[in-house]
Image (cartoon, rainbow, N blue to C red; front, side, top):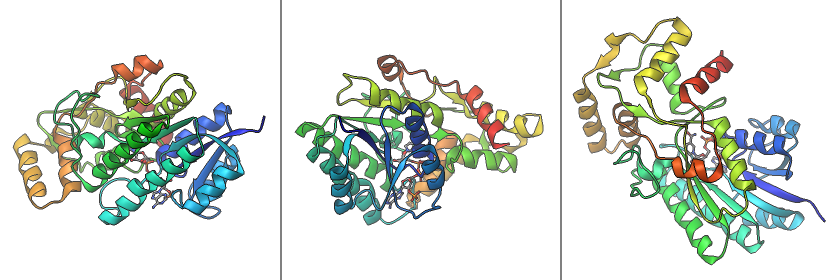
Length: 325
Ligand SMILES: NC(=O)c1ccc[n+]([C@@H]2O[C@H](COP(=O)([O-])OP(=O)(O)OC[C@H]3O[C@@H](n4cnc5c(N)ncnc54)[C@H](OP(=O)(O)O)[C@@H]3O)[C@@H](O)[C@H]2O)c1
């Protein structure tokens, strides 16, 4: 029987590189990664060294997709590539890459009869922070920015193709931490090291996910039979207090907890949120919300269904800090 492959997008990025590593270590199916950079583009040499087959181009180029799907039997598709975060482009760019790009990949996957399509969405479909916590699968969606709306629309596209008969799952990771991250946890570490992070007096619960465990979840969902057309929330075993995480980071580098002189009344954060929201700066408003409000998720359904072992954030984050050095 000819070999069957897993097609991966976003393998050069933070989460995609962890998923690629998990797939390549597992070796059940060889991995084809569509990457847009030439030789030496970030992480491509590492992907090749680990055994991935690289195809250069855009994951939403119809000609490229036809070639990839006809050259080899693609069994699974894991779609992770996206324009991520706010302020990375115009509305048209988010539409083209995150929504229409996903639709083109879904169409090719459907046409060529893939066994399983996994779409990497985001808890951003609930908004920068969810209105109710813990947010779960029955919580209403409230995408509140260009990026979050594009993830929401891409989820809707996945649901449309499920309606046509494609076997697809959606994973909504919360904010991930781990090697190669350049997002919220990375910024948090930098600000804590420089002692530039203002904290609210009253600390809030935040819920992260280890990128390594998240990659393991992708692999489990790919390999488990009988998981049809489900949505999963991916997060560590429970929320942590933002102040505990900040103290952990500060203690790791300086041997003592974060100076309390850097705390501000919660009303300052509320005022900032109002100002940023009124001036339509969704990125800044989102950051203030993440520092001053609770955001955590109910993942019990996901974890028990797939036998997933979520990480303890403070333990896993300590390991991550150790790797960063
Ligand atoms: N990081 C998080 O905490 C988090 C949380 C929830 C959900 N997610 C989701 O996880 C996925 C990956 O996020 P990430 O943090 O790993 O992002 P990332 O590091 O920025 O990686 C994004 C990936 O998408 C590719 N990409 C970006 N723009 C593209 C374009 N215009 N055309 C083709 N490919 C493009 C990048 O390719 P290049 O290497 O060529 O730039 C890269 O491989 C996204 O779908 C995101 O919505 C992330």
